[in-house]
Length: 250
Image 1 (tube, helix red, strand yellow):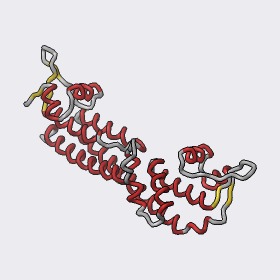
Image 2 (tube, rainbow, N blue to C red; image 1 turned 180 degrees about the vertical axis):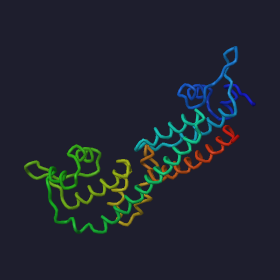
Image 3 (cartoon, helix red, strand yellow; image 1 turned 90 degrees about the vertical axis):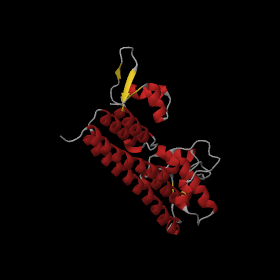
Image 4 (tube, helix red, strand yellow; image 1 turned 60 degrees about the vertical axis):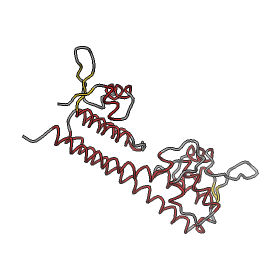
């Protein structure tokens, strides 16, 4: 059986030795035996587990517990329960695919709403009426306004009045938020749409601007979900290989 030191493991995996110790502390790898002098002894199993964990933790998607599920898969594999880890990964992959379907579907809903924009022209509602009409909380409406997603005009008495155009915009925002697009990605798309009604919505909402300071996974949701699916397929294949290697049939 091959054995490795902390420094050798770090070099093989391409991480800092301190990261190796963190993985051990977080129980993302199997228990590490030690020599009499206290030095850690790693095996090929640890190398495979590190590669699995590194791939799983590359996923930036956090919504609906996906990150937590990835961590649970890693820990289950570290305990040599590969069959369970494989089943968990299949469920994880299925959820990622559903998230991507939701993201794609939201784009189609937006296109459909924009094609029927004239039907909203006669609408004029107060904030509370909008909250009931769209089933959106007052706090959510305030949050979207504070984040610049819409600018509502006021009457002389100070009351906000939502026009048909505002309602259409809110329906678009609601559809995209339900699919977990970020507020910044939605704002980017809405601004681009106001400049050019014929833009490729899917492309604009999935490609952050070069001068954006902070970019999250939900700012490029479809791309991130595609990457997550690719990683999940690798994890699934890797787990099956680990199961053959470390739990061979009798």
